Image 1 (cartoon, one colour):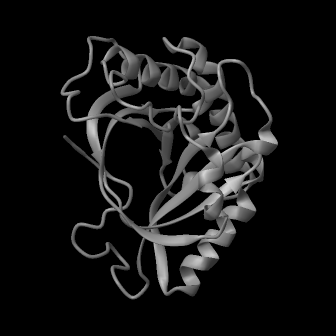
Image 2: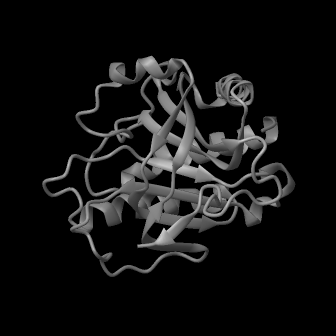
Amino acid sequence: MNRRTLAVLRCAHGLLAWSLGAAVAAVELGGQGVDPAGYDRLVEPRIVERVDERVLEVRAIGDPDDIGSAAFGLLFQLYFSSGAATGFTPPVARARWQDGLDEIPRGEWVGRYALPVPEAVESLPEHTPPDGVTTSITTWEYGTVAEILHIGRYDAEQPTIERLKAFVEAGGYETFGGHEEEYIVGPSMAGPGNPDEYRTILRYRIRKADLGRGGGPSGQRGFSGREG
């Protein structure tokens, strides 16, 4: 991920903070009731098995400069209007980015923004997504993943990403698919807060390096989603 890619992702992060003003409740970017200190152990990279998760997903195709704010705003609007928050601890927002962004025109970028939802949410309220945006209740697949906690500004993620990838390679694994960001602490409707205290989990699906070059073993498709 080079500087150009990071610059555009910084823009997407900024749009996320701005778009929270469109949400129907003043939630912090990061789950309510989440103790950020509880994640500090993840400053050391780790490999874990993670179960698949049912999510409300907003998928946006286009330049994040143009479409990101609408996508994030719609995500939070749908989450609260769907009743997902009733009796359910508000979860942590997350996003997935496709691999190889540096070779893809910005107008064709795909961003997938999501919030986990309980089984009781079977459908979405009536709404009209903007052009280039689709919504669904779907399942995000995981399996074996490598993850690490980045503490600090979004534009300083690259060394943390490189450290995680080096850890994966040293363990005889390789990443596949794009990367995921889970926003434990970040901006809120009250403002940007202190970027030096942001906490973001960076995550990749991984597989043994001698498996699946050219497609991977059956069922391992990177960060994919299936309608659920």
